[in-house]
Image (cartoon, rainbow, N blue to C red):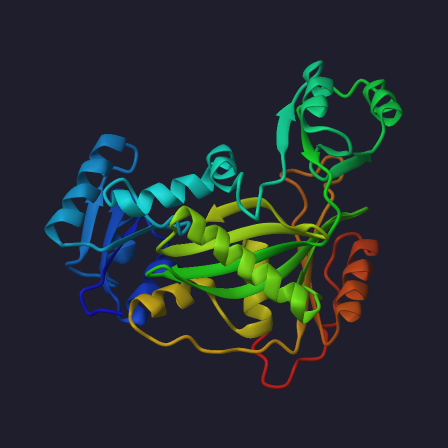
Length: 350
């Protein structure tokens, strides 16, 4: 990476700013007035302060910093990889973030998006008709039902579900989350994580248990989608269904990704997605890691009276079966993590 790279972090967390300083990248910060003191020791003389509640002032400040300090890359605290101050980079990120725009780009590609819409009440039947049976209907936090025939749809509609619900084209195949970092249009996959819904909630396993051919197809597909929209810089999280007819895109989100997923990646491989991108910006080479350990998490179904939903639980082990058994035990124990940690992998950091 060129020594001319200059990074602007907009309203970062202290943790993200500290990682950027440690990476050695040429750094500037835009922070809120009430957080000035938190960043003084990290980036003295390289911090611009603004009223975070004044959108116009924020836009002016960011544009001024980009212009006056010849900023080449901009990141928000969530890892969104640009602002309108860097228009070329912003376009691709916004296409990825908006499902309808992304669907238009991918419509004639080998990686079409899975069709899905949100509907309520009387609109549900019409939405199903537009997408076509079979469909998956999701309501509540993690309740879902697969409807394959008209009779099943009629019976379900008879239950009087008011919505809103998400109606999604039913595609058979494993669902995986591909975590990537991109610099100068070169994509690096840092994790492939399985995701599925269980009777108890939403479950994740890293690394996903795929044969090598399917894993390669998943990685290549995620990178191809990023290429199709011209994504040149930033982290991203691409969710795919690996069907018999080829990969289908569920969503792509620019940014550092789902906290559950990034935590599992770090547990297994020691890779922190934020640090990986910052080190690449600073010119450091990628550090190859091989996963010989598994980690899983489950976001349990909220119980009646839960405020804000239940927190997720994490388990580790030498095999996927070990991890799933620990998660099952945690679920049956009432969403409490197992008190006995799994044996540590040799040389592990978890």
